[in-house]
Image (cartoon, rainbow, N blue to C red):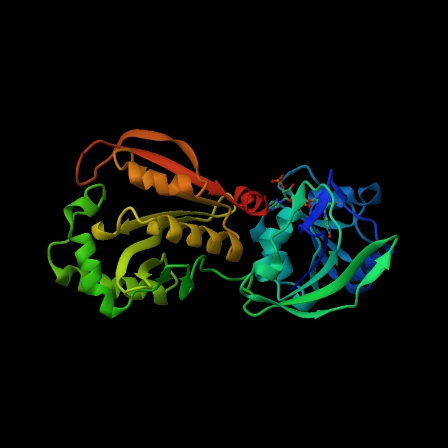
Length: 358
Ligand SMILES: NC(=O)c1ccc[n+]([C@@H]2O[C@H](COP(=O)([O-])OP(=O)(O)OC[C@H]3O[C@@H](n4cnc5c(N)ncnc54)[C@H](OP(=O)(O)O)[C@@H]3O)[C@@H](O)[C@H]2O)c1
């Protein structure tokens, strides 16, 4: 699958539902690449075309959640599931994602090639996309010489993705490891069991948890097999946080719930070794998880919950620009109370990319 886009210096792509620049050579390039192919767009992009009509000589697929949105000459799909079901009918090399911002940012992880017209200029933009060149999986394959039209300089760049995900991909989150400045977030290894036990046998660490503290390392040996089985079966994943400086596992962070409806949602849970609190490690780990999820899957909402008495846990969420949604009162049994108040924080895909681009 391919993506084709024109970006300004700041990766701005549009303003007031219109393009930022009108470059004839770029329009010609776009036409050459997409004629006879399948083009996928959001409803706003279709409405930005002349007379809001589909593009000629192409199969137009339009994503819209509006049940009343229908266009003669275009296939309208109402969800990503419907889109993927439709895309399965075509050769993925013939599919081009053509905008706008929401659709580019969602579909980028599925694309193997991105044709990016880079405009060496900047304009006020209310839509921008993720900077492809900053993503670890993407590399610049080739770039044309600098071209000029009406004093605007631009060049055609081709980026390739070394590990695109398949759109019939069922598992939501499944990576081997992510590295941050101080941490490696990775799958559980047998040698981690002692560090893991140190963490979950501690009263302070497990005080606000739903599960009782572990009192026998044998319990974790059994749990180890369960976690490995989950990895194999692509079920919810527990990840372990290794501190680079001493290779000790000092925390866990995992997907505790996945909900397919409403464009995909996950709930994350975490724990950290008592001796490593107040160093910002969990904030760093959560930041990496949020980045991974929004930049590599189509999940639309990430949420986390914490006992309101565990103020430090809430701070980790706040520092990651998550929004406080509210508190469910006396709703949970934790190890410290049988009527804990639980606060929920969340971040949406759109908020993540807006924060990243601003
Ligand atoms: N520079 C370029 O190369 C380029 C190319 C194309 C477009 N653009 C510009 O981009 C701007 C338009 O972009 P945009 O981000 O505002 O809009 P868009 O991506 O064209 O369309 C967004 C729409 O897609 C629908 N949608 C997205 N994901 C969906 C899902 N999973 N299920 C159902 N519907 C879904 C949304 O529906 P709901 O909101 O109803 O939920 C939303 O209305 C314009 O300024 C345009 O000129 C620039």
